[in-house]
Every structure is written in structure tokens, then in C-alpha cells.
Image 1: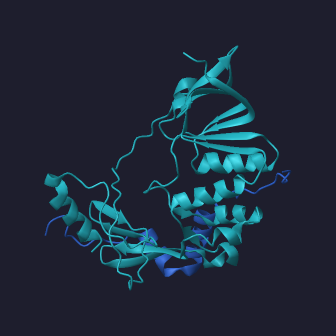
Image 2: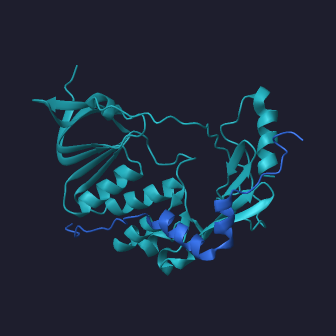
Length: 46
Length: 248
């Protein structure tokens, strides 16, 4: 079997996250919102 | 030879990409007389960042524009998953975020830029000059005080209190300012191409990983066929074989 055809083993961290929906929501929050979300703080003057 | 035309603004931004347009919009909205220079005639270039993340959607919401923004063509990506060989993995679920931005909006970048440009142009302090390319800096006493550029009607000079270079990874102004770039290297090559999508397909997997290579699939609203940026003919068979092995 060539290297390209070999069955890949899913890395342990991916298996854990796939099995744990709360971790999926946490990762999504980190990816989607970041660590320190930015906000629009300047008022509209024009 | 005629002298370059001159203008003056408070802020001149070189480059009308996401960074330049959003900065220009926010500054103009706050009352700063802002000019954005964009060398192309429109924003319609494909294979750019087509994801608008929840953090950006929230900012658009804070600007009071989210409902109008989401009228633009887009797909909602609520979960992130993919295939690792023959095994499916799910790595992210945005549905736990506040409902108005509990997803990634998959939207062509030109839609995002057109949207920002449309709303920015309503501000009296905002000017977007298309087909105008920043070619260098104006310096006085060791300070940057504006940019030089060229447009269809000739060369120009814009003097500004603040000059911002948003002209991309090969930034002309960054080089002109002598700012060094730290090259972190890139261990992979990326090939963008477009393939037709089965309209009945519901799989929105983002990644398909195989031994030695992976494919990221971004579902577009457009289902047109054909590949862009085709590889050279002699490598085409190998490229097609490797691509279909990970993303049949």
C-alpha cells in the first residue's frame, strides 16, 4: 500500500473534540470571536 | 511635462482591500476627511478571503448595518468539520454564539468591499478613488507627509496628516518607507481553483485531509464550472489524481 493510500489515523485532539460538543463550541468561539473581540467605539459624526 | 495634481486630506489610505476600506469607512464615519486609493477599477477579483467571521459580523452589527449586509449573497457556515481520510471530524460549532452572528458568512470578498464602499460613499468625509495607485511616499524632514501616485489622468500627489499603507503583501509604500518584513516562510503551496458543485449536495465539509496533502472546500453560491489557475499540462494528471483522492 503506498503512502498516499494508507488509512490516516485521526489525531487524538481531533477525536476528543469531535466527541465533545462543548469543546466544539469553545473552539468556535475562539475562532469566531478571538481572544479580545474588537468593538466600534467611535461615535458617528458625519 | 506638467506638475502632478495635488490634494490634501487628513488621512490617505493606499489600498482598497478589507483593511483599507474598513479603516477608511470608520475614520470617515468619525469625521476624519479620508481618501482611499485603489489601483483597480473594481473589487471583482476572485480567490480572496471569502469568510466573514462572527467577530466581523458583530462589528457590522454595531455599525447598524448587519441586516443590510446579510442581504448580500452568502452562505452560512454554522459548523466546521471535514474528512480525515475516511473518518469525519467536527471541530467547531458556532451555534453557541449570539444568534445574530452564530455563523461564518461565506461571501465573495468583492461583495464585502462593495458593501463597505456603498455605505462609505454616503459620508461627506469619505472619498474612494479607483484606478489610482500609490507609487511612493512624500517625505519632508524625515516624516511621511503623503503619497505620490498615478491614475489614468496622470500622476498626483496627496498630502495627508496620516498615511496608511494597506497595499497588500507586496506593499509598495512599506518598501518605500524602508520597513523591514519578517519572512516567516511558507511550507506549503496553495492552488486555488473552482469546480462545479452538485446543486443537490448538502455536505459543507471545510477540509479533506489525505496523506501528504489536503483540500479546503469553500461552498460558493455560484455553481459555475471550470478551473482557474490551471496547473501546467504535464502536471495536470498528478494534480487531478491527488485532488480527487482527498476530495472526490
